[in-house]
Length: 396
Ligand SMILES: Cc1cc2nc3c(=O)[nH]c(=O)nc-3n(C[C@H](O)[C@H](O)[C@H](O)COP(=O)(O)OP(=O)(O)OC[C@H]3O[C@@H](n4cnc5c(N)ncnc54)[C@H](O)[C@@H]3O)c2cc1C
Image 1 (cartoon, helix red, strand yellow):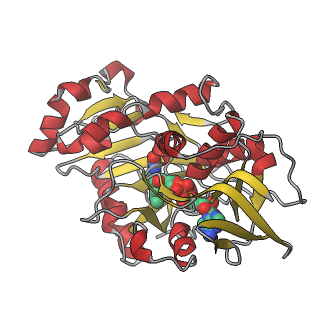
Image 2 (tube, helix red, strand yellow):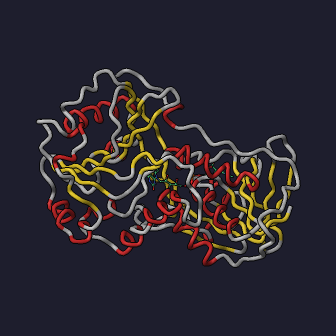
Image 3 (cartoon, helix red, strand yellow):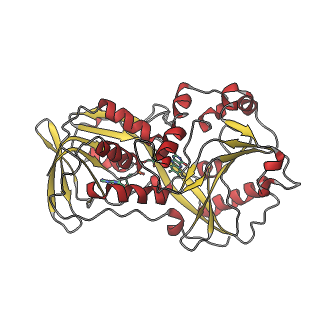
């Protein structure tokens, strides 16, 4: 099979790129086992505009560039962008940022900074959500102009739109093969049939799977950028909870908790918690992480009764381009050799930034038309299962 561009890996990075390539008339194909498995489905769906990066008190160049992301996503959600996301559910148009108790000096700088004032508004008391209209709440409340998306619906929307260019493969048995100074892709389909795919350009967007894909090429690994994993142990609460999309800020430049709310298949509310509990919980037993989060929530929201909720944790690695000090890259990372490009978006929100960087630099291209029919009958990669359906919840 011949294609202009082959994308390997169906998370947000690959799907967004595929949508843009097809819109430009490029014959692009994406191969994956499932869609969104790994990081995208585990993400909180927050479309960052760089505020989190500015918590240190400094608004860096990268944080400013990221400021464009909510606008790009909003255009897509309204149907006026490069990618059509009108079918995606928006969980919240904006998030809350709340402070409780003391603020570190850096944080005071953050709230005082002029740049931040344009990105968030103090919420007037009469507009407080009922959750914060409590006599025990003494902190400040701000509204942050960054939406939160329902990630399963994002994946389903892209799957429906791009179905003609998605192919399910057995990822354990498929991979790159060198042919002279270029690479091609040997696919093993779900039913065991093999297919050789010859592509002008191959883009690897397999998240953590990029590492194994590169290792299997037999290439000198020193010629490729290394990947870093930054693990998290996310915490989930399920029960009678209000819908909340908020960052709780304290003394540190990392949120004390970042809370998003989701409904499971049975309609139950799940709070999905990142920030410090998830960072500090890495490598610890789930019971310990849950106990620490329970303690933190009791301190942050003492008027809420958490005694009846069920708890779970979810371990997942963030996969990124390696940084010398192991810190989070400020932007997407990509690297090209021969006709293979490996890419990590760093954030779900940065998928458009990665696609732009790829489209500006991919030495494409044949544009043989987006409607080239699939030469063989193949299966559509399914949208993977949300993590709150897979996690095991317990009462304590
Ligand atoms: C807990 C958590 C919360 C996060 N929250 C946010 C957030 O709120 N906002 C935000 O902007 N970012 C967030 N992020 C970061 C964001 O999720 C990632 O940056 C982004 O989803 C990475 O997308 P990706 O497409 O590169 O990789 P992935 O989402 O990991 O997708 C990889 C895809 O490749 C497939 N695959 C794997 N191996 C192979 C192979 N060998 N061949 C073919 N296919 C393969 C997988 O099945 C999958 O479909 C979060 C990350 C984590 C871990």
